[in-house]
Length: 582
Image (tube, rainbow, N blue to C red; front, side, top):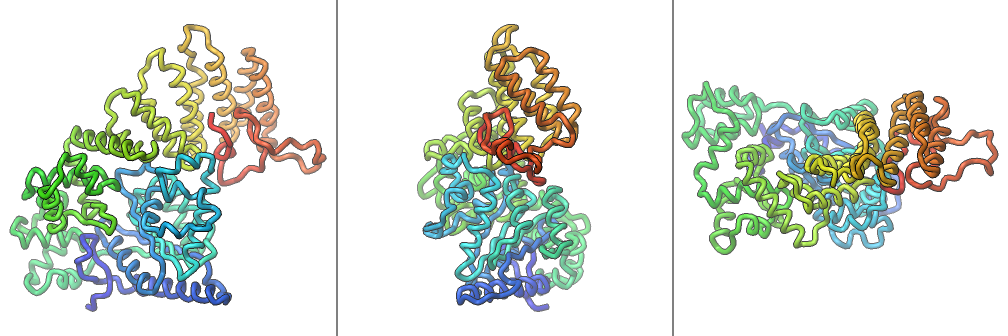
């Protein structure tokens, strides 16, 4: 068989086999994009080819998705397309926009010169500087990202390759959803890979709907045939042994190559009873020196921060001996280095096995040292939060403050990450009177973030618990701040109840709160919410068409606690676009 397809994520050194049909489809899409870009550069109109195209590559772990994507990237570069490639990672799922940030990391610094929406996309380009863009909202960010991709595609076409999306964070998935639903009007090919059985339901559903309406092309990768495996094994392996390894691996390229390597190294028992994949992969670590094993463990824990400089700091090593160890690990193909010097383990499965086999306290220590180094380098709270969270094993005021700041910075662009970090902070906050008000405030913020990212029922449950729990911050008498938190919780809970279709419960909740005799300002706030939600048919803030324009309510956002008057979106709850945090 001609070597013209892709196998195994086990390494780029593996020959290309059995993916000819998939590559032919990609060649067609890349050629179309290149022609469209050339036509646009000449001022020609090319009907139907000036819109983005989405390709969904699915398959089991080790089946060859990343290897196929790597070959597609190489073919796109040969055609002159701009290629951006990013990978989602298993242990950084709460880092907002991580896969897009990874893809845009190699972008030419001058690519945004003159781009009017550069500030809006800073959370994707420079996470450390994103703290200055907290006024942006995630929907504006989605539109600005589409504009950025169109700009990058202008000269010669663009391939945006996003790998391992089954591990992508919620903010990245939301952005991808926007790009799939609203095609970019430019010659862009958006190729994604994912494990279909591990993909979030929202991602799988969105891509499946795209397949149904013709906007997404799905390529499902299957196992290798026996003849493919025989070609991989080469002439030195007998047909019987190759057939046994093919049967044991079920045609999975990664598993087959791992079994083949172990057989050649004399470490595999009888092929009729092959060892587990994890045991085979970890077998490679047994020959390493303790210092080399420490480097491998640090790379597995650090993830996207595993630069040589960071590795030296967390391992406490430097000099020639450290450099020699790194080079030896690269020579063994345990580690790989990208052009920017970032070190990674050769496959995500290997990273998972090494990470889980690293002692817990060792992982905690690596995360702690990484967080400290990032702080010294001036990294934002959102960038440090991942390491801070994983190093937090007891109450630490400074660490919790970092999580709170990270949540505040991402509340409008990545509410799911915001809710997660507030949950971590709340779990470590002591249950004492000294921290009672802070707990109530953080709970309210988390409920708002959950509501903004679609967790309506969880948000409502939190709010009901908050309303039912008496304040303990100042004895038996609630303070003005406590009362303000309670009223805001009631107003938000009523809003969530209405969005869940429970208008009667929302009205009853507001009336009960009014019966408690709140302060005059709170009476106004509760009364406005009650008036807006009294009738089931008037749940949304849309002024009647027959009402004179002069009598319609203002569209200017009100103080937090009353809803801004604007037309609701069927895709997002109105509280996801408010202008101020609680």
